[in-house]
Image (cartoon, rainbow, N blue to C red):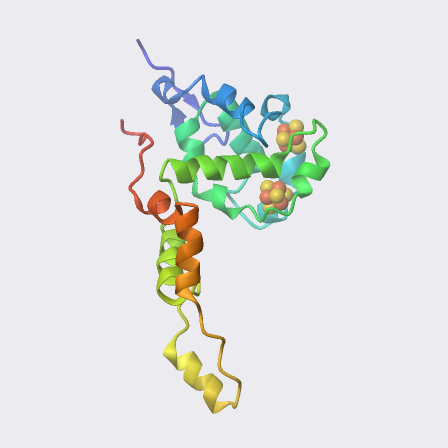
Length: 186
Ligand code: SF4
Ligand code: SF4
């Protein structure tokens, strides 16, 4: 079959017919939070009111929803911009079609994590949490500077407690495995 050469909703990369997963939108209809995704008529209110989109050249909730409607599952789940949403719910409050946009983004993220598409920065933060109990390692230099300025010591992290919580939700196993969704070259 000859592949169609269209463009993405953002008009950047050509879409191959082999990338389209027509079942994706129906999967989303069954997941709590994304049940109303097909009601989106692409008015753009969510993007225009999104405080993150205002400061980002690439984060567009409307576009992510459009891509999902088209069946571009791999592109949605592998999108780094997915992780920029601040979960402020402005989009959900303002959508004229009652689409729970913030919940849809959460659903995309959960699916991305299940498909091992988690950005390296979160993997690094997990490693730090497991080691120190903090999402970011606190440099020794900063600890010493606090001491020199007579500031009280920072509370000690509790990696054992963190491990217990992360183990309970299988978080570490989920995010540390390599990606399983197709790449664009497949
Ligand atoms: S505001 Fe609602 S209808 Fe408009 S683009 Fe966003 S999700 Fe779609
Ligand atoms: S919840 Fe996310 S997508 Fe919606 S307005 Fe806030 S930052 Fe933007």
